[in-house]
Image 1 (spheres, rainbow, N blue to C red):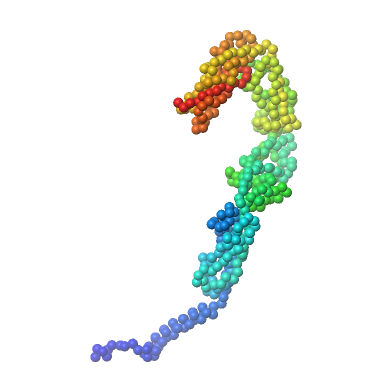
Image 2: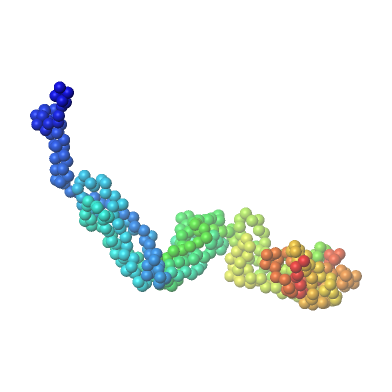
Length: 427
């Protein structure tokens, strides 16, 4: 009785059961449709862009010291043929694209072949790709430093009544780097300045230097390196003025009146360009130190091609100055001792002692009555060591300038230059 109640599986019953038959038919139909669709699916093409890094590490070129001078990467467009339903899943990860770097064995221009391969188990075919080669120049790297030459697209761009001073570059030179063959072709580095309107105020602008050959053509494969990313040129614009020539007197005793001296110039008045806001009323061409003046005529020559705050517009390179000290001024010689030389601003951790003087006689200039009461005890000799860098101090004996000053005198001065041998030791 229990055995009769058990149901047994029967293919005959399954086939003749309408419900099961419908399910099986649907499943079979789907399988047949999918299989047929895959086999009969139309083919299509797809283009994939693959970025390829240019790397010659570990190649014969690297062992020979040859570098690649070209783009650091190249994009290769690869066209593949595949079943339409597979197209969306194909990416650059399915492709192996590389340069045949072993073909570069010497310097020169090369078309390095590009190889494109499908990775394993790929369901597509590579139809074409572009570019098929990587073009670049290969050579030993070289470098040199050159000054930047400024050129202007317009000759006259300064407002009437004004003049241009010496242009100032944020960096006056650049480092040129590239293949040796092309670096040797560079004859100048030029930055062209384009000024649209006339200037009457000092102006700064960005510049871009370019490496040119002897024919004025841009040299290929060259890189210009500078300290900062942006280079600028400042064009000083100066107001044209007529100015009297003058000099400054330094080291002058307090009671000396320069008007008592006869001062004359080879050129008394000049045409000059000055900073409009600088309140300049004279063309000061330099300083005359009293230590250079002795009784009688003293002559000095100043180069005036480069002066602070002004530019002399006349065709003058030098101006001579004559300073005549009156006849009632005389010289007096005093003998001094090296032990009287004091060292000032001695760096911490060191001692300094003068061991000898370039001259033990000191020449004084003044009126006779003013010199009478001055003795060697009034001469103050000092060696200033403030210019020494503590990290670069060398012990031993070296020569340093001596400052010679007359104590308690405002009418006399010391003539001449003096030095002392100073022994520097560690404390």
